[in-house]
Image 1 (tube, rainbow, N blue to C red):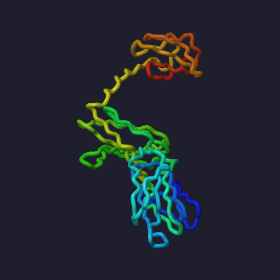
Image 2: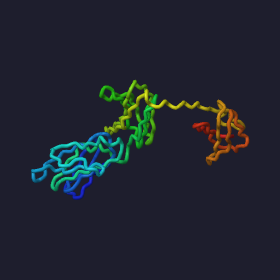
Image 3: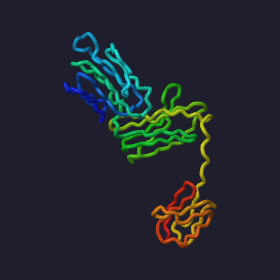
Length: 275
């Protein structure tokens, strides 16, 4: 839960945005909100101070760097666009005694724990993204920026596995293509965005060659493993010790004890059980 802290507790105000709950109080001093940047700016209502001669908020600090001072507006915007998406941020607003600025949209700073879009990767033929702490209630929208508007390319339901990696095929247009992943919780209606990725198929490095899949028979051998083609191989036991190593298409395993092993060929790992 995102929390806002202060030095002196004069009153408490709960802001409810969807089902996102933040707490903050009116203090003579400062308001602090910490969390994860989600790509949007923070808006603040700024009432008059008790003397009615100046406004309540004095200065704004983002990650301990002063960004706004001498505030003379009844409402103002804290620009966070210089931050990288999904990076930690702490915002501190100093203010006068007897009043408190009001955060209009604190939900744009996501709590440090909980659901996250960890990464997004755009390749020549696919888009992949990694998730932490998902539930089955999430839906993912893969979006592309076209003529200034974000258009949905595909909708993808969450598996609800907690941590997951997803991938969808994609066909790029010529020139720069901008993509992002939008995640929406269908229960709370909270929305999260990945960072935006720009991909140009004409200038991007060529994709790596596709590694040929090596198969073997039988699944439960006794004396001999036959590979689908000649290749370098290793056989590793349950203690991760290399038992056999070589190059060929037929592997004699008569000397192996009965049990489970892993056949390694290139980047491929395949389990088998010797009878």
